[in-house]
Length: 130
Image 1: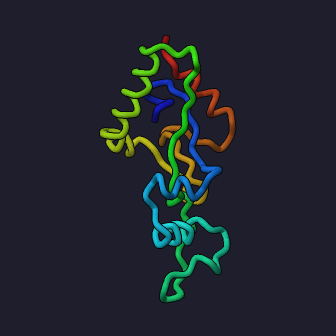
Image 2: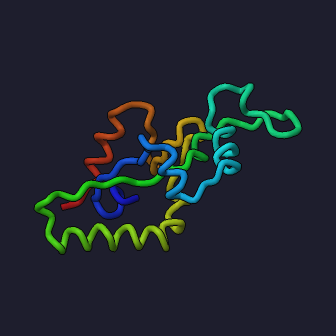
């Protein structure tokens, strides 16, 4: 939504320092094990305490959004990004009906765009009004 609503390009944050991120997000060992059961590809490791299989769901992977600031970013640009993040943190849920997601790979996309081929991505660029 940062891109769609504000033109801010970001990426999902996967962590290279897993234990640090678990601590940062206040995820203890018990919670980490639950998340792991949802995101592991190995169905033998997706069993709950009753040995029932937990469905694979990549959306359960904890993470964060990353953006980079240039050394040359001015206060106006930085405040624009921070205001956008704050807006989405409080009101982003209101836009969820406009999106759909793939449970297997956690990819979100606007409902009106099919991603069957890359020509649709080009089509979305044609929808920009100047």
